[in-house]
Image (cartoon, rainbow, N blue to C red; front, top):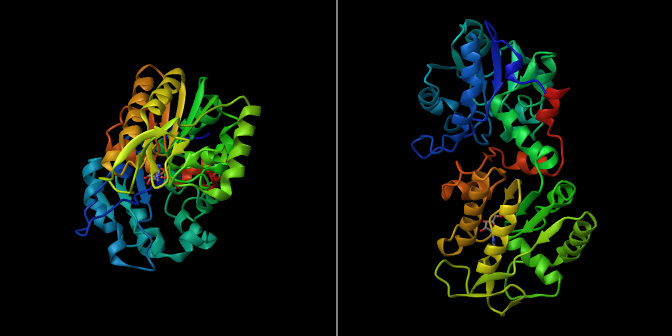
Length: 395
Ligand code: AMP
């Protein structure tokens, strides 16, 4: 696996696919800089080698050229975070972009305009990718968030850089973290899957059963398992058409010697609202008119014990409706347990959608080993798929 550390960038122009698809407010200010901060180590290493950086990214989902999606809006923020002047060019291919790239001196950074102003980007157009390839000497992919897309800048462009392509620091870290969970991590390995629906996580569960020793199934998806086993779940969220599959997963787990932990009790609410009435009940006897919205105290204690035994931990999906303060307790306690296990030497990876939002909201992001920057890309990796953006570098 070639990374930027395998190259000396002196006098080289690095064409870097970054993920600067950052959220902007109505004044076009960046409201979360995580993705820009995450790309910094790659950019700085290349500049320190004596190279220059040509940064390419998408922003939002524009239909053609739309100024509100211009990467021009983020130039000042990128400059502040990197501590280096950033030259912006209002094109990503063609004469203007090529002239700006040709003029670039070692130590300088050029930011190209939004790749998705061209429909060819998402279409994975080969001619467009070839035009991009003219801008740099070495191709670096550091955009995990789009590595599951076979777009021109994330995948197709790599074929024009035979022997001159590599992973940036961020993407290499993402790959290593997933590998630790699925292949090389110290045992016992634990996966915690929560969130709303079983249906969105089935492929992940089936794939990770070969890798883990323990599996915690929490959040809304636990109720499909509880009902399938004959429990009464009241008005809790459930996918009736997935009950058979749930039983099959439990059978597969048993055959593979994976210990599955399903919540024992739940906080039940009489409405899907932060100030609903609540009661704590065993998870298989939830009265009609009540729905399970968070892990109960016995479940939290049970999960804590499992987490503390494990040396490698993957966390995807909240244990309850954490967006409502009254039902965030189970997710916060789990975060605390994972933080404690991490402090004791376990490797912990948090990734995929809402669990990242939860760890950030509750301040666990620097108490776990790694927080993934890719939602869909992370989920597809856990499903066992080789992402096209990664395969294109390895080829
Ligand atoms: P996912 O995107 O599948 O990871 O699901 C995340 C969502 O699951 C969050 O918005 C949570 O509010 C929701 N969730 C977690 N537990 C429950 C529950 N017991 N009932 C309903 N929704 C839940």
